[in-house]
Length: 297
Image (cartoon, rainbow, N blue to C red; front, side, top):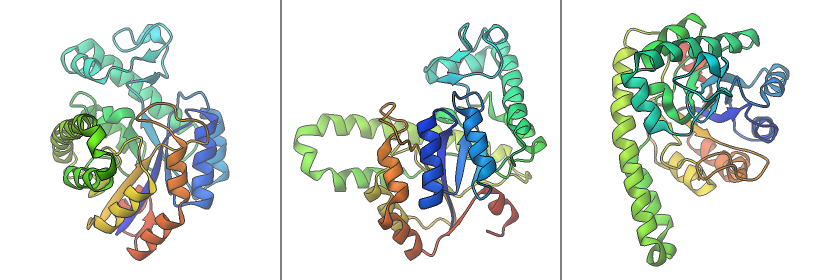
């Protein structure tokens, strides 16, 4: 199996940057996805330049984050300070139905790709914050930019619902009596994600036909987002039979930033000897999207 291990939100904060570097140098991390308008963007770029073995891609931000263009140029997308709201459903509807919003998306995407190119780093891959890059109004705009700027691949969130639900049942038995309602809501949320992102990923796959951009057969992280603990990853590595896979994380050396986002537990998972052993046991070859694209990891 060809295995990509990615950290998202690179450049969002100094604590995330520190976690990316540590997880790459001492753990199993092979790649990081860069927020080019993040508060710690410049520091992340310097880390990447000093660490050429770390593959770096663009983490497109069109929700819950800062824009590259000023807010005055994105009135349908951001507030006056150039910040996208944390409202993916509402934004998704607007992106789909509002032609002015799509024009502004195109301009902002161009600005984000251009800023990445200015770093001089190789564009290993493209993905999106909260997977907004696979939105039907966004993905067709993304493909030509990814090709023009030489991206190795694009993330499509192809997680496994059945495994995620089985894992929840297996490891939550002791808490089941007290948390039946909570577990049911989590299951419904995962089912909703599986349906929505499954349909979107299939549509994106059709749009990529005949394209040189690489995709992984499976991409894990959606179903367990914010909770990528050691037991889950070890179990996942023992379960998956994908020929190529990406597992993405949200590590930080600081405190948990939100329920589904950066947290120190995921750094611990990336440094875990048990995870390293599970990778070795599967004889997985650690790589990045450019190696998938070349077919020679």
